[in-house]
Image 1 (spheres, rainbow, N blue to C red):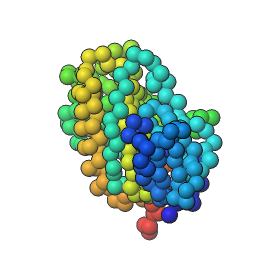
Image 2 (cartoon, rainbow, N blue to C red; image 1 turned 135 degrees about the horizontal axis):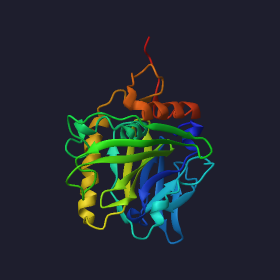
Image 3 (cartoon, rainbow, N blue to C red; image 1 turned 120 degrees about the vertical axis):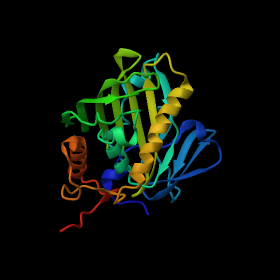
Length: 283
């Protein structure tokens, strides 16, 4: 059944890659509701379970729709229009967890040395240095700025390890991005975005997109590098309990390294989001 959560309903969601849609009906789910997509002679079309048409947008090689009335447009990504960047869509992955858990995991640097050993981190260099969290009220976005972490292989081109500089951006509850110094062009920053399709409260699909300043790596190498990382994250996210994300600060004890997670949960609570969240049942 479609959620009644207006905060969740009034957002744009990526629900398919544009190139995978044909004339045959393509069923999927969004926020607890069956929806159908198709590419008709008149263009893309989408309908909800009752047959009512849904609004559509095509951007970044993805198809977006909504079950509500978004106040804004799909997030603007400046790097997407820079002609010399390498665009790498990394394919969809199904995850048996809340999409909010997936966003929180993306923001978490502390797990790098353990989950992504010898790629995004390595022991004994496990410290997460202090960083700044910013609520950009005018844009209604959450940022984590000045993040630094030593990474053995920050990108497909990296073989020597470096202290990586990263900024994280959360432009909406089910979209998360990072900007990092490009290893092969240190005067520029790579951009990686993760778009999440919340199918049910604890079931989602996610697709990473990358816009890279990399004129060295092959497309296959860049794709395989990101896919390997995301599949490692999938194991962690699907084994968290509860599968939904608790917003009550008493539910899970944070550390200093979890500043972005704490801010993300607070931001969601301020918005009044309920879909994909878990009630705290402790004493």
